[in-house]
Amino acid sequence: MADPKGFLTTPREEWPRRPVEERVRDWNEVYVPGALLPIISRQANRCMDCGIPFCHEACPLGNLIPEWNDLVSREDWRAAADRLHATNNFPEFTGRLCPAPCEAGCVLAINQPAVTIKNVEVAIADRAWEEGFAPPRPPERLSGRTVAVVGSGPAGLAAAQQLTRAGHTVAVYERADRAGGLLRYGIPAFKMEKRHLDRRLEQMRAEGTKFRTSTAVGQEIGAAELRARYDAVVIATGATAWRELQVPGRELAGIQQAMEYLPLADRVCEGDLGVSPLSAAGKHVVIVGGGDTGADCLGTAVREGAASVTQLDIYPQPDPERNEDTEPWPTYPKIYRLSAAHEEARDLRSAPAADADARLFAASTLRFTGDAGGHVRALHLVEVDERRRPLPGSGRTLRADLVLLALGFSGPDHGDGLIEQFGLALDERGRIARDADFATNVPGVYAAGDAARGQS
Image 1: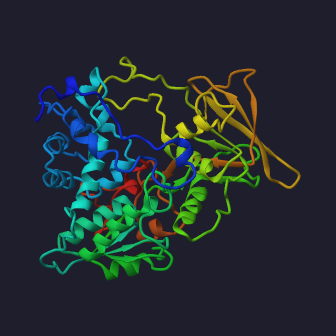
Image 2: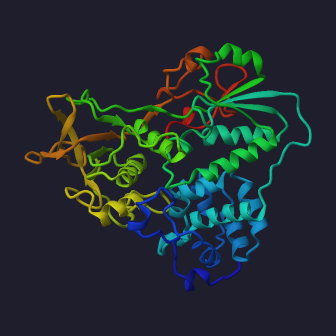
């Protein structure tokens, strides 16, 4: 470790966000450009190089965090980029989008603010691109084997890149018109500008990966044809079957799923549309669901100029600090977190009815009511206790011209016929069943990512 006393002498300092009034007028990333690099070596110095690095265990990728923290503290960016890419194909994505469970597992977090692991990660990734440390790595020789990857989200892209670099001939099939899956049409540009995705896709093309967009497997091309054409198939279609809200009035116009709403805003940013047909401009918006997708809807609605926007969370408002009795270190605690979108809604007073920032906590939707034309105009809710039981006399009504359902996902989509055509077995939760080697019940067909593990 470069500075044995760094964790004692240096306070936590995070990548500063741009002023709210400035950033809500555009779709650029919320952080101040160039403000991370001057502070990141000092922050990496706070890493204690623990004998047992719990951040390692907390990271779903098993990133070698203490190693690249030490290298960054010494400003050896090339070596840091090599260690980071050893476990992570796309650190420029995860460094921006991951909720950072590694920081909850940081040993320093037992009694101090954790090391800014996520910020260090994205700084390494961005520096690697700037300095040319992430060139295309085409294979030295081809294996003669062919693989089809179905789905171009993070799991599909990672599988495709690794298989291509191993020497196999890989084609990625994507039903949308552009590759990227949720990264392209789901994650708002203010959280990750699409130039990061485009840059990585160009690298993959230079390595030899082929992309077949606007091609839905199960429709434009059948499973039998795909299996006959390729030696192996990897299913990485994600968990895209959204959960519904079965309450009276659900049939009213103006009630949309979050993943019907968010992709249209992304298409505006791509230049495909001048204005989203589901734009929140001038509307009173209610978001049902307290997770990250709901926060993405919140930030999008604020930028589109919503008259008001309120987010409903069925859980009670979390405490600002970890409860050591119920969620001891190093578990990932449910605490009150203020995302960039919530900060914007709070400062702009976008949700006058909310408990905190834009959120109403412990709120359960009872029904919707609409106007004579069949369009939603109000959402009726009730407060609930920790067991989700309604509290008498707590009913409220919120004005709603647009309701966005952000209730999570139940598993892979069955609508395109892919699962049935391949004859894939499912587990008890409706996910594609696989063994420890990612193999499904169909020889030569494998499953990766959320299609097999569920939404994550």
